[in-house]
Each structure stands twice: as C-alpha cells, then as structure tokens.
Image (cartoon, rainbow, N blue to C red):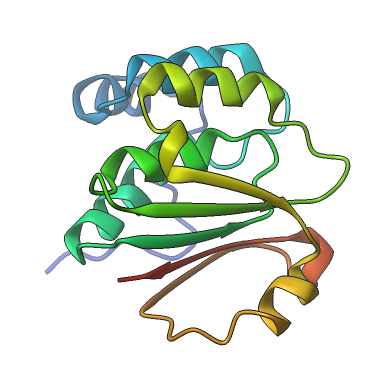
Length: 156
C-alpha cells in the first residue's frame, strides 16, 4: 500500500490547478456564503470554505441541534453551520469586541438562518466558564492560547 511521506504535499499551494479542480467539483456553497466569502476577499476569514463544509457535514452527521461557535471573526463559519441545523436548532456565536459580523448578519437573514443565530460578545474564558453543558463534538482551529483560538462546540 502506498503512503505519502509526511513532508510530501498533496497540492503545490492554493493556486494549484488540481486543488481548484477538486474544490470546483466537490464544494457545495450556499449563495449567501459565497457572497460573504467574496466580500471578505483576502482578509481574515474564519476557515477555508472546504474546511467549513467538512465541519458542517460532521455537525449534520451527528444531528446537531445546538452549536457554540467561539471566535467567529467574520461570520462565515456560523453561516455554514447554521445552514445544516434543523429548524428548531440554535447556534450561539461568541465574538470578541473587535470582530465585525454586521455584513454577515444581512447574509444570515438572506439565507434564512437569522432566527437560529445568537451573537454574544464574550471572551472564550467567560464562555467556557459559564457553559458546563455536555459537549458531544468539539472542534478547535488555531493556536494553543485562548485569544488566538477558534472553537466550535456542537451539542445535540
């Protein structure tokens, strides 16, 4: 069985035509999510669109009804996750004070998920300290220190 070496990359970079081809065929992006991604351009985006789709598929697979998103900088990832929630599902997005989700709010409404969304301005420490709920799925993306870390906690 062939195994690639850890140092061997699958793609030569984000502009690799093989990666572009694969994403073009496999990525299913909601029109509102695409607008938000294009609006963000080269600025700091929550996660890549393919990683967000993977996370949403995992949340859907375990029939998530409650999602806690911490550190959603621009609202892209919460939008993707809210789209897979059932009609009675809830997504709580915790943002830092410097983060701006005002543009994303309009697209959340356009996508029909605004009623599932709740945005709170709290630090990660405050959120984790006040939320002892049973966690069934935990996804962490980012650094090892709270201020630089993004968390997604899915509770179903």
